Length: 126
Image (cartoon, rainbow, N blue to C red):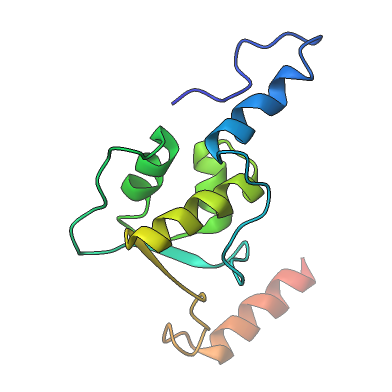
């Protein structure tokens, strides 16, 4: 997938704003509250929303989120601003194509806090 600014020259600054605006159908603020950079997004197991009416970026999010990914990771993978990515994710949540959850804590992931502290302390000594 190419970046939306690909092919623009240095004098095309005004034109660079057209593509994200088009992708979001003019929306500038996500409808969903609580989507942060570290919110995890995963494609649902249910039937996917119909491809008709979805932007290519919507479909790319569905494909990328077969494995849980953070909002920041998705934005980076699509090479889109985070604000645009949040709007697209909100669309997919409304369609039932993805679900979100906060990231796991160290305790939930089964990580040993003692080990994590030892690693942190070792890094600080470097």
